[in-house]
Image (cartoon, rainbow, N blue to C red):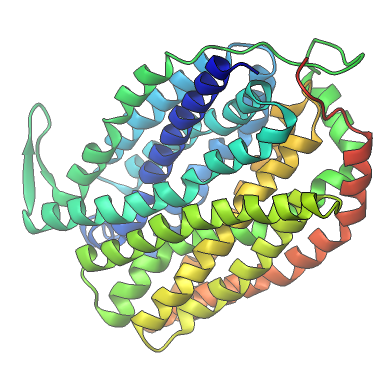
Length: 437
């Protein structure tokens, strides 16, 4: 790989990571705005949970596999550009919603747009880098989860706090809107500029190894391929549900700090944002270092081992932080949860990238993302809302609801991941992981 090609590839990773960061800002901003939205639209916690989870997940999850099929055949850069533009526009439309139904439909649109990004991006990365660099490039891209969430809290908290104090805001064409609505417009529209920048990425050639066919597998052929190897593929998806559940249940963290300790949006957003921005990238880097250390020692399945460590670490911290007696202790454990979450997220995706052959990689990644996001989004935010409405009904009940949901998912997820260890190693030895020619 020439130095020019290498530089071009890393610039592409930087742009794709920026898009991924933006996607999480647009996705997570709703969590910061729970209180003003609930008051303005007169919503229940269950409805808020539906907005954070199922509304976003309906098409974000169901379109992942078809988009993976498209990414294995068509120009992946163009798919990403269209998706970034769509979710940016739909995020802005969230700010124009005046009812639960309108906000629900706008969140669906955000999910449709964001479904295009990661299967296409990871497929691009797989063809831009040699085998020895793929895990590192993937981990950097997946680190956008934490950075995006951190900026959503940091920037979103500041913007939301300022706009909330302003009461109503006059926006050209749209007239007077509430502060929380203006916040959606402020974070959504800049995404159109990112979509334009991604147009500069060159679509790489699709690499293949040995006698691997050039043409990508059909949807059903890909499903049969993965299904025949389910003991290797499924445990990663089910195990990573502990990480996604922690992340998406974390959408209630703002409500936890507001209801339990009466924190203001700006203060809460600042400290949560700093935690994500510091410990998220740190976890992504450390995850890669752990994997490299396992490689240096000649240990099998290094990314899988590092992923399991991350899942265990974040599961313990995510269960404990909502139960802390002070916000300072909660923030300390949130940092631990973010750190472990970043390790698990980066190494889980890296495990899929290094295991799946090129003819099915995007579809395998799409199915993996469908699994972890469907279960994480369905269980995390939705069940917390249901529990606060019907079980833990006092003002501080959101913390008990968050802890209950997380521990209920973490233990079986870790056991399933452990059971999939040997099948993963077997598949790694048999698959078409290759160096570019």
